[in-house]
Image (tube, rainbow over all chains, first blue to last red; front, side, top):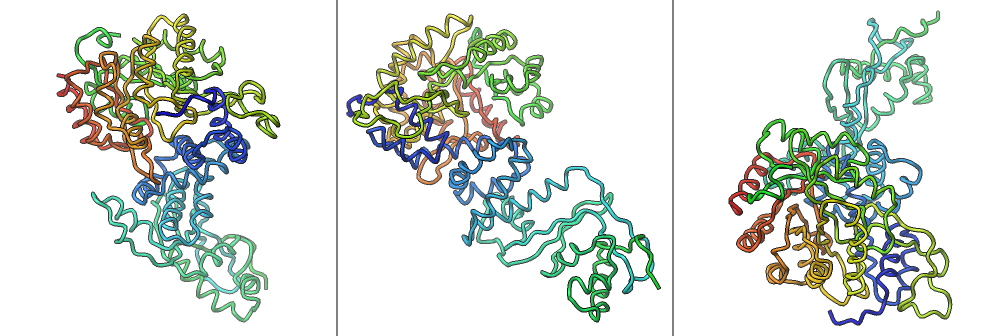
Length: 265
Length: 293
């Protein structure tokens, strides 16, 4: 150390603290200090503090944190998230569920097309889905039985969540649990995964075609298959085809026949 | 507190976090004490009940001992309360700041003012950080620590020991290295140290210092407590990480000092981790006991 002591320690502390607390003003206040401040390092330090604030979600995002460490992107993610997270805190979103939701939402936009970041995004969303399923909630819907036809009113059975991912998170989890994880072993292929929990059952993952989430979302316990055909396909003539599709989903235990409005005529 | 600070044996403990309660349930004799942060007690005073199972040591990040903006009086009163509740043998505090002046909006330095040495005006309230920050390493800060400690020592009937910060970047206006700074603080303030081995490795790695050579220049006889945690190299810098195992390098460094160091306590900081393999904990705790056995 040879630099003369020229800037008051108090001012340096005020500058660093202001940079940390108000990232939007960091460049201006650092420039006024008169001695170089490594702003990039300060941003990373804000990221470290942000990471520590998220200790409460580590148990839910255990694999995501493992992957972040393995890819060396942990500090980068939290550096980039720190300003947005500060705005969320200012809005009072500080409960663990809020932090989990905020981080997963940020990872979604942060991923872009980068393969490693995309893997992190998929895994974070997957672990969020599993965390949501761990919260006790009613598993709605009972299949009233009978034939599924054009005038049938459908209901969704159980709790479900959809993940559109570039990998199978369960396979990524296996890779990460190895003593020496090899990310090259991750199979990267776009897929749509439906996570489903029936009453008194565990969570299962079903790979589905891209149209299935839309079919399931349309089921509202009120509309008949014929009405859904009109709504989804704009063509009543497609009712038979749609009924066949819903019959397959019924076999999977995802939809059932409701006891809603009785068919007319 | 039986043993801690009075016994000749080196006690081995762990900072309180999610893994501690299950660990104590599974292995009640594995640890000698639990280190409890004031910041945890403030939010959840019931945390102090862990003291029914094991002695507790109070750790603190809120006194801003190297800062120019004192903490709120309420904070100091609460710490006093928890000193009494935990019957801690000392208060471990960071040699760092956590409160600071907030720079006013607009032009932070008035027109025509030389920013060098500019102080006082342009501040607008205070900033309360949630994470301690390494201060400027200078004589001015050493003297400030002395003044702060004088005021704090008058309040508490247990000693305050100071923990070296991890240094992630060059602090503007610094005139000395971290090892020189810590040594000067220890001498000027006549204060004992909490040597965080991992922080030391981080600082050495980021600032290009030799961790062992610089440690040997410290007044090691003043080290009352040691901290051990994980660290990781990311984005070109070393970072503190209490969620991953203490690396062998940290334990080896501590081992090299064992002949000259006689801390009363060695604390594993795994307080960010939802889990750490039991085999790792058993091995590392045994290693430290053997080191100072």
